[in-house]
Length: 426
Image 1 (cartoon, one colour):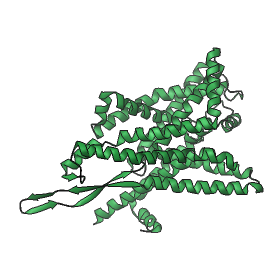
Image 2 (cartoon, one colour; image 1 turned 45 degrees about the vertical axis):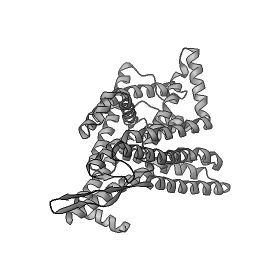
Image 3 (cartoon, helix red, strand yellow; image 1 turned 180 degrees about the vertical axis):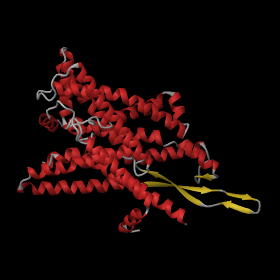
Image 4 (cartoon, one colour; image 1 turned 45 degrees about the horizontal axis):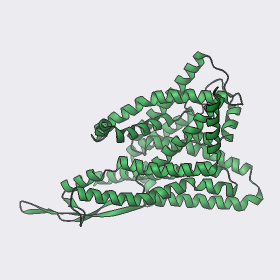
């Protein structure tokens, strides 16, 4: 089906059209909220502060630009993502949480509720830390607050995070993409015009070769993301014949698709969330009374300013989170049990444990290629950016990866809804 035909079908379908317009409306509300600043902040000094700090600039992108405005949604959905990481880590070491996650949809709802509850104290902590960080900067971005101003500002920032979390859940309910991912997507896309504008403003004719290399790398990165996202290994599955009365059922061959990158863009989001934490804590500790703490903070800051250290750590976090998140969502034993219940088997493998071990082994092998590719794509801009002299490439690596992955995921969900309507009409 051609692209134009799909668009026509989407807008002819009243229910699907309403869902898409509803999602777009919520994203517009998010962008409006990102431009409502909290009073008492020097916005010019704030923008310059974020422009001079690469790590904070990346944090600003993931907050949808709301942090550089110190808006009511300045924290973005960072606290919610952090809470999700904490519970997924705990589920691997706390048996009770692991049992809850295995309860299916009801267990997932309980974990989601725990995640929402944990988001509140994390937002309070992150909001307070951000205020102190901006106050400790040498630019006088935020004046000294009274206790009342502290409380009001932290409540506003926490409410902004909860508001975005609610918007994300409303979007996810419409099954037009993942709500949290789309909010991050909207924030990244909204920052791209200004990044292009900054690049063109400082562009000189002798840089045309560097710009051409930059564009070629960007196109290659998009192609790589699409390839890794769509690549899969098909495991052959055969179904035994079953006789019921005078009729015979089953007896056909199929396949079980295992994606090379089953985790999607989640490892990038997790890695970015964690890699910013040490740098933020170090900047907060720079004005501590203890000389030891200040020395440690200076060491951490200098380490993260080293592009080699930053790139290697970023790469390892992406690879590690790819394995971690795949282990959370992919359960070979459960898949093997389901195949056995349905009368299916992998040729040459015994049903049950041997099939689970085989699926786990195949998943680990293809995941190695997927995780390394994802890590290389993530850090490639850090390598190419200084060579081309196009500084906006440094922050667009993770951004481009997330944007392409979210677009693919959203398009697939829309196409699946179109297919469901085809079956309903039939």
